[in-house]
Length: 87
Image (cartoon, rainbow, N blue to C red; front, side, top):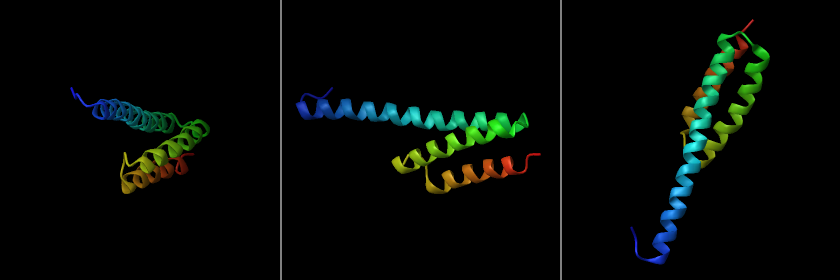
């Protein structure tokens, strides 16, 4: 544990940002799973709703540097293609 006042604050800030980043990454992963579930259930309308929310959260994670640009593009493209190929 740090003794210097600025170091104590830095530890608090870092832990808070880490928690926020973890929540965003978990949300992205859960939305990917939810979108896959809707696709497998052949529910195009709900899949599109989840996909739009997923796009927004992937872009936020990309902007924060939590995921790489190619990873974000790949995930979005895979799911978009699956949704378009639905009946």
